[in-house]
Image (cartoon, rainbow, N blue to C red; front, top):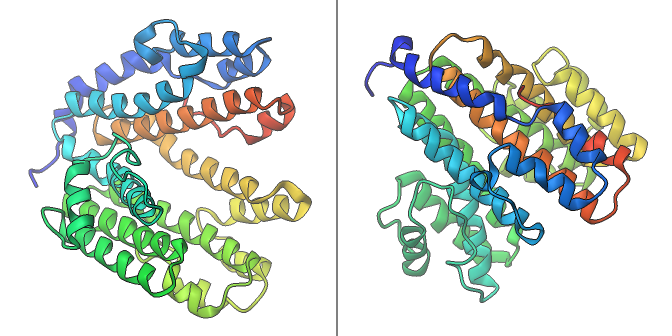
Length: 334
């Protein structure tokens, strides 16, 4: 890949700074929470540029959020000298589409309507690979993952086998692409995402009473935390293992999250703590004058914003107490 220079991103970073004033910060999320009606909360989306700034019909807010992720990818790709960098993270959408399409196939549903629009690979290519049971035009790692997932599902007809295979391929592919780009920030983010995923796999697996063989199959390569830390302690309690990784980036967050799980707040509390810790790393990108870092930071900041908006609006729709919703919110990028 062409060498990436900071000065190449002078224009892109300036454009980004100009639109970051529209990001929904915690104070605006608080106002969404305190709005008297669902319609009043949705007005904040139009003010933040969702739906092209036009009034949003209450029944359509979910589709507006789905479109927003695709829109931000398109915007960033349009201003970046090296838009292929975003493909590292857009791969998550491609592999999510694969999961959805495979599960739709085995449920005898339309696999084309199961996919989203934020990925990099045409869903027609994925569908062709699935129907013809061959790699086709897909990247090698992706094509092999589809075939492996179908083979594993064929053994036990367990949808979890699809998730295990596709999740491993997702992080493997992301790591491969990050290494080929060679930018330290991109590589660091992928490593941290892998660590975060492995912590969740370990805690969930322990809660479900999974065997050592499960952890061997499901843990992901490519993180900063040695896999042996998880595997060698898979038959012990969760808390001692988390103490062993306290010194790592996610250590304190994982321990705090686990305390919340034990207090009855559920796995979502652990996920929130880990998400917040990753955002603390990504927020460093806001202090980079120019370069790839602000682009990636903005992308993840927008993803977090969309997640927070979804938490607020789904919660209000289901009459969940405001304080409970407030506790679920992730820290904002701005």
